[in-house]
Image (cartoon, rainbow, N blue to C red):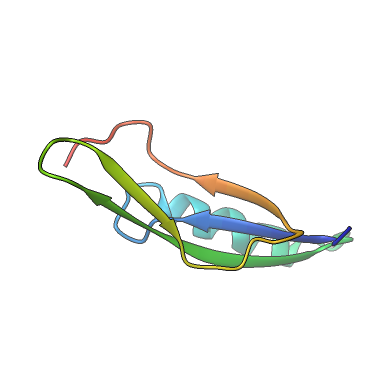
Length: 74
């Protein structure tokens, strides 16, 4: 089992700055016992309202947290 934690966020989403802040905080935390990395998720909305999310990172054997807006408003 890997000790790496991957924080994911959509660059176009409103929660990207928050997720980046969380990532920067855990990097500066003096007691971290795991490796942290930051990744991107591309989200596309189709004309019929369906949503497609593509994780742009390898997530195999990693603990992942996807930070996103709860509102999908444009």
